[in-house]
Structures are given as C-alpha cells and as structure tokens.
Amino acid sequence: MAYYFLIAQLPQLALGQEPPLSSAAFLERYGAMLSASDAALLGLCRLGLQSGEESAPTSSAFVNAWRGRERVLTLALAKLRAAKLKFEAPAAEVPDGLDEVKALAKAAFAMEDPFEAELFLDKGRWDAIESFVGLDYFTADVVFAYFLKLLLIERRSSFKSEEGFAEYKALYAGIIESAPKAGANGEPK
Image 1 (cartoon, rainbow, N blue to C red):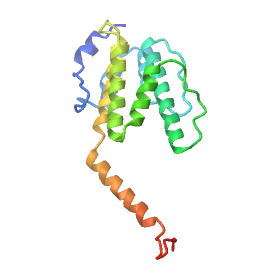
Image 2 (image 1 turned 90 degrees about the vertical axis):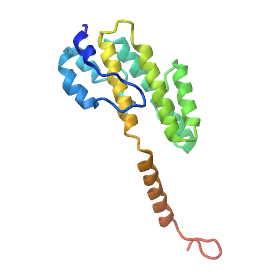
Image 3 (image 1 turned 180 degrees about the vertical axis):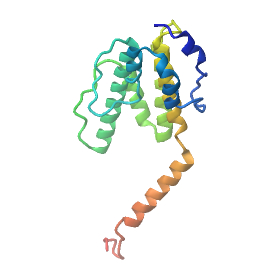
Image 4 (image 1 turned 60 degrees about the vertical axis):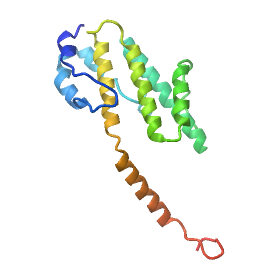
C-alpha cells in the first residue's frame, strides 16, 4: 500500500535535533491512516529487545531486518556487560551473522564515556534504518523508518547531561555515606 498523503505530511527529522513531535503524537495523528496490517507491524518497531522476546518473522522485510539487528545488538551488549561484571551471560545465544552489529556493540562497549557510547549506538541505528529503506519513498517501510528515527530522536532528547551528572553525584554521595567508616588501624568500625 502506498502512503503518499501520510508521508508528504511528515516533518523532517535529523539526528541530534529536538523531535518535531512525540512518538505518541505520531501514532495518534497518523496511526489511523495505516492499514490494519501495517499498524500491527508498526507496533513491532521498537528500540532494543524486550526480555524473552523472540524475533518471529513478519510479512515485512524491513521489520524483520530491524528486529533481527536489534536482537543481535541487545544480546551482544548483554554478553559484554555480563563478562565485564563477571555475571552469568544471558542464556540466549547471539545469532550468527551481522558481524557489523557485533563490532558496533564492541566499539560502543569499549568507550570510556557511557553518554558517547549511547550516541554512537544511536548513530549506528540511524544508519541501519536508512540502509533498510528501499527506493520507493511512499511505502510502509518509510513509515516504519520514520517512526524508528523519531524514537531515536525522542530518546536522545531525553538525555540531560546536567541532570545525569547531578544524579550521579547524589548516588555516589549516598554510597560514600553508607560505606563502613575505617578506624585508626584501617579496619572498618
């Protein structure tokens, strides 16, 4: 199905700028313009992977590619975090293939600054979304891509570095205050 009218109305998106509308507003304003099957597929377009969620194939190559990629990214990051913290790794195996996604996860995980790592992952996601969209500009794939990009922009706009740093300082101060105090000989009191 072609979505000429819907796609022609969509405001321009750019990574790093404020979202022109929220994802909820998008769904409210444009959701009814989608066919029932495309609306159901749009509901599968999310960032990350829900716990225990499987990527069962759908009728959309775009949605399948996106969900498969997110599954690999989510599992690769979970395994890297578990190894670093010496926790048991998630039971789910990282699927074979998508080596560029595994490399993206590794590169982000190696970054010192978690904020920069998140920005790096978002840029990788943005690029992947663009690579999944075909050349026909008025298809459901373009709507799915737009929604995912909107979620990325919305997510990025929720990052507040000043608030994050203030929260970090408060958490750190709480940890220091609750830590056992050392006596004169270095032993906890």
